[in-house]
Image (cartoon, rainbow, N blue to C red; front, side):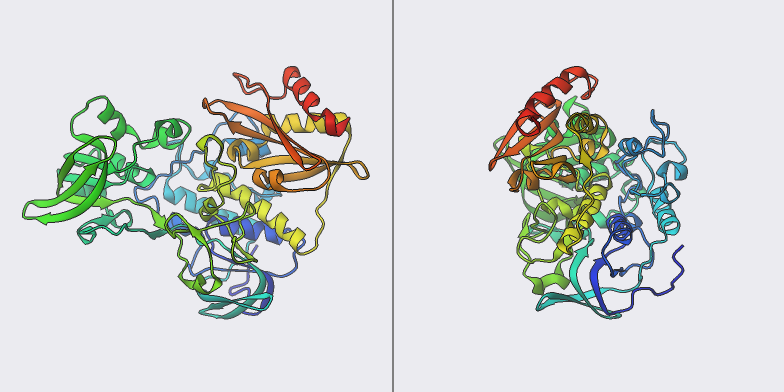
Amino acid sequence: MATLERPFPPGTYDVVVVGSGPAGLQTAYCLGRSGIGRHAVISRDEAPGGMFQRFPVFQRLISWTKPQAPVDPGSREYEWYDHNLLLADKPSHRVLVRDFMDRSFDVPAREEMHAALDAFVERAGIAIRYGCALERAWRDGDELVLETTDGEYRCRAAVFALGVTEPWLPPLPGIEHARHYVDTGRPSDYDGKRVVIIGKRNSGFEIAQGLLPWARELALVSPRPVQTAVLALSALRVRYLQPYDEYVRGGSGTAVVDAAIERIERRDDGLRVHAQGTTWSGNLELDGDEVIVATGFRTPLEPLAELGLATVADGRIPAQTPFWESVSSPGVFFAGNVTQGSPGMGKHGAAASSTSVNGFRYNARVLVRHLETRFGIEPVRRGLGRDEAIEFLLDELARAPELWIQKGYLARAISADPGDGIRDEGIVPLAHFVDASGPPAAAVAVEVDAGGRIVPVVYVRQDGRVDEHLLDPHPLHAFDDAERRAELEARLRPILG
């Protein structure tokens, strides 16, 4: 149990983690069980939980926890069914979110998620220095210096689990007349009102779904059309899209429009949004009593301004390598939903799950293992026989939650060095495996193909070349059957013999 009231005083550490949301907690847990010597965890908050203290504004998550699953809740496979739990090595540290749910839904309420995070900190004995806010960061030779409200921290590497939590507002005339998502308030505040929502992604549809029982009229507007092919594979499809379903069926009272916003105008009878059609031609005027801007968030990067971070997404997110290190500032790493700044392979437009707990919990574990290698700590690489390696990779394709949740981003790799034999190289970012050099190696991943099917894929690296092979899909996703075993064995024969 963590009993230190104020652990991690200012000083010199190998690694400093900034943040106590789910990503900060997961990184701290993995660091505490790594070979890395001294690390510190600091947070400006007074309790764990990060964004779940405030978001989602209408209380329930879109990531599910299945209380009764067809596998042992203490098993690795159960991670498929609980997209909200954090990873733990010891059974006594494992916190099942289902134990905190009233089961009126298969998604936890914000308070239930927060209670599970509190329990994780308690059971795992994670020490955090709360009330310690980062104010400034800079580089001093080989060290990073973090100036905080408690004093100065020096480290060889820093992991910023800051989240993407600051409101981002587009440079739009009249934007001051609107509310941002974070200021939405209670659904009952919109009883009988006309509401225009600018934005058609997660937060926009969350607001629309929550206001359906209250608002008289709803209109969602943004330049890009709703990407139904992407949403078909998203939890958003079954959580928030009733407003969209009503609109496409011709239901009254709800509109979902593709248009570029030109300005917001204050009028005697409310607000008017002026827009120009994008997938259609013409001008549009949308009248509402309230306008809510659901245009997303940005990472709070102001304290890191002196580190020279390259960014993407209109400066909202730091650009990162496959191991979530800043592409422009060595030693600066990220954890949490900010890891979406590492896009991965991005094949067929399929995005990684790095924006959600179920994705970035694995990123954090892989990151800590990567940091060990940066500090000269050699990972344990289990030896495998030829047939054992084939069965191992098949089993991973069929059951590994890392591969099934982080589709197309994380892979299970093996090496086949003639002098060292076949070795398990662990879970690695697929983009790193494809770009890396070294002895003959192979990696397997679960991906989504151009037709939207879930498919097993094997990558074989040899003599400076990487060959990609799609194995046949299966209607029940039984990727460990005899047919796929024969396919995999044939693909691996060039390196395994």
